[in-house]
Length: 265
Length: 154
Image 1 (tube, each protein chain N blue to C red):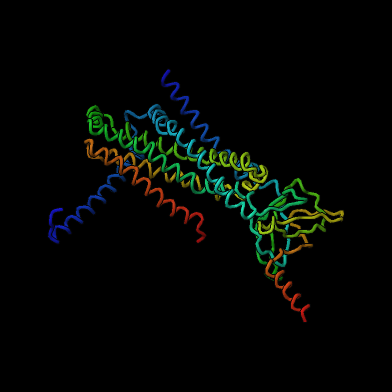
Image 2: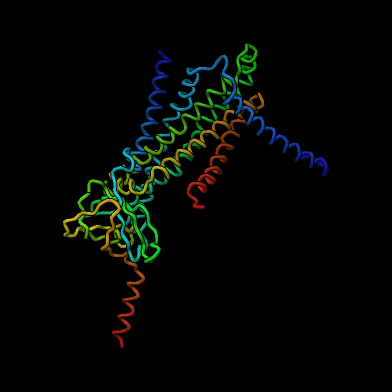
C-alpha cells in the first residue's frame, strides 16, 4: 500500500463514508421507485408469474431437502439429550418450536440468498453490463418496472411460502425420526407439540420474521445487481456482496426481531 | 404450452405454500377456527402453584380436557388463583370436583388433574372449584424428611 499523509487518510475515510451513505440512498430511492412508482408500459402479471417460477418454484427442491434433513437432525439430537432426563416426549415440541421460531425463517432466508439472491444479482448485473437496461430505456420502457419490480415482488411473495413449506417438511422429518425410528409415542409427539405451540406467539411471529427477511434479502440482491460496476469483475463482486450482506443482515435482524418478540421487555 | 406449464407450476407452488401455512396453524399450533366458543371458564385457588405455567394442560382420568388460562395472586387470601379453560363437551363436572397440581414424571411439567366428586349439581361458567390440592415442592418434602430423621435420633 502506498504511503499516505494523515490528511489523505482522512480524505479516504471521508470518501468511503460518502460512498456507503450514497449507496444506501440510491438503494432506498430504487426501492421507492419500484414499489410506489407510476405503472407504465411493460408491467404485467405474466412477468411476475415468470419470476415466481424462477425464484420460488426452482428453489423448492433445496428448501424441501434441507428442511427434511434439518428436522431429522433436530429430532435425533433432541432425543439423545432429552432421553437422559426421561422426557423424550418433549422432542416434538422442541422440533416444532425451533423450526417455527428460528430455523424456518433464518435457514430459508440464507438458502434463498444463496440460491435465488445471487442469481438475481448476476442476471441484472449482466443485463447492465451488456447494456440491455439502457436499451430498454432507449425504447421507452422503464427497466425498474420491467426488470426490477417483478423480481422484487416475486421474492417478497415466495420466501414466506418457502419458509412455511420448510417448517412443515422439517416437522414431518422430525416425526419420521422420532416416532418411526426412535419409538417416541406418536400421541405425545403431536400432543406436546400442539399444547406448547401458540398460533400468535410462534406461527405468526415466525411468518413476520420471514416476511422481513424476504424484504431485506430481495432488496439487497436486486439493488446490488442494478448498482454494480458493469463489467465481469463488478458482477462477481456484486454477487459476492449480495450473499455476504444478505446473510449478515438476516442474522443481525433475527437477533433484533427475536429480542422484540420473545424478549419480555 | 411452455407458458402454461410454467404458470401451472407457479400455481402449485403458491397452493403448497398456503397449505403449509394452514397446516402450521391448524395441526401444529392447534388453532381452532371456531375461536373461543368451545371452552368455558372455571377458577381454582391453590395454596401453592409453584411450577404451574399458563397453557399447561388440565386432565381428567389422563385425558386432556382443557388448559390453564391465567395464573394470578388472589389479593385477599394470598393464594394462587388459576383460571382454567375447560372444553364445552365436559359440561357435567360435579360441584365437589377436586383439582390437584401433579407432575408428569419425576421432574416433568406440572399440570392440573381433576377428579370427580359425587354431587348432583354441576359446575357452570365462571364457577369456582373449592376442593384443591397444591403442587408438591420437593424442598419442603426433603425438609420434612430431615426434621423427622433428626427427631427419631433423639
